[in-house]
Length: 108
Length: 108
Image 1 (cartoon, rainbow over the protein chains, first blue to last red):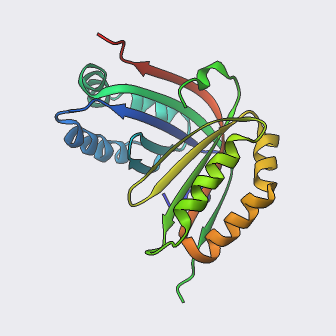
Image 2 (cartoon, rainbow over the protein chains, first blue to last red):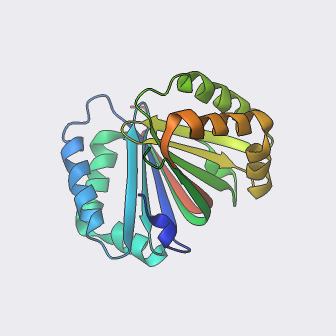
């Protein structure tokens, strides 16, 4: 997310995961969940990367927006499937962004 | 980091980056900085992954620990080199971890 500094007192959800060796169907559902998250009220953006560990950080206007997304029925089904089939480990941290700054190269 | 739930009221620094196309010397200095961070007082752990975007989340006991690490002279030099040579973009978010939970598969 590039423009989060326009928002004040927002939240970050840090979701770190380790997948099983053959997480069949994971990529497709992960993409669906990304699309669905973007449609939720209070969604501000997302950063994601995966090597040994996968890290997805999503940004939200407030705690209510995070709770609403957690209670979304499709999201619940995906999490349940994840626990049954895809994840060896995951860790969720819900964090308040207190300070931030960024750096951008101006085109030369 | 696997055992952060043993700590209370700690902080996460979310560092997202986009590298230039040929960031010469970056990997080596990134590894040095990881080693150095682990030696700092208040360091609790780190998660890192990179695809198009790199995400490094480091965990700290309190804001003072983060400030100390920010003021470390080797770390300052590395950041300066990063701005001059390696990064197209970066964003730093300093966050208070308010809630967290995890999931682990018990070996069958």
